Image (cartoon, rainbow, N blue to C red; front, top):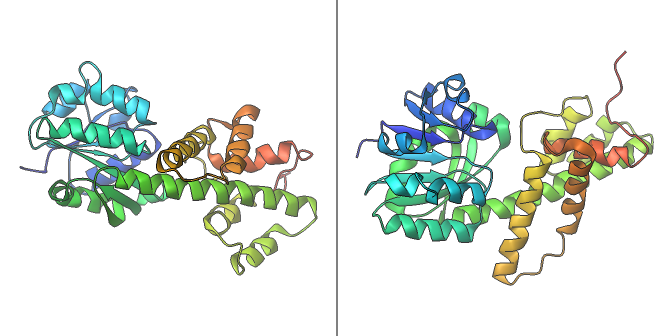
Length: 299
């Protein structure tokens, strides 16, 4: 099977950037999104329907908001499963329920096709540069055929195991991301109210046991007024935490630490930050802490 024909369904913040990297790497992409204008913006050939993508490609990547949307695109009338061919590979780059992923993979196998879960990490910046981390689950032969495509969007590809393992790893990672971002936002607001120099506070945190991705990569920008717009929103972060809680319930593991990020990103959404980057959670916490902003206002 030739891998020259690549399809992409869902060209949003992450899907669009991945598409651009694939096209830049010399693989033409047939792209479909509900917003018909975005495919050309990312260098893809626009498709008029899911059916057109499936019928004219060998490998198809999905980047969609959640499992409900994935299931509608895959199982709905005129969807992926209505048109998938034997040997065709669909790789889901979304953050999704592992149980849903496993069920869909079984349905693909009934048509002698492959559904691979490939969770992504690194955010919009890594997607832009093609340096994502992928955590992948599914059929080993199908994953091997995906490697030339993955090489254009990722710096690291980690094989996690059978179907659902990639999305499981993604949910565990995203939960820790949510905890560290929410907790660091709270600490930085407290530091600001205490009158600390925030650059020096970050220097302390990053040389101490409180260091995390948010202290290293997010807040050095945020304290100077750059929120790194364009990444995961607070609404999507809340969705990921809920998926994590569902996963732990299925596994029989107690989730004792989900209340913090649920409250923080729920607050951000309630205060009007739901559809902007989740880093704005620091402003939501600042709003209820006396109108605190980390960055100095520019004259």
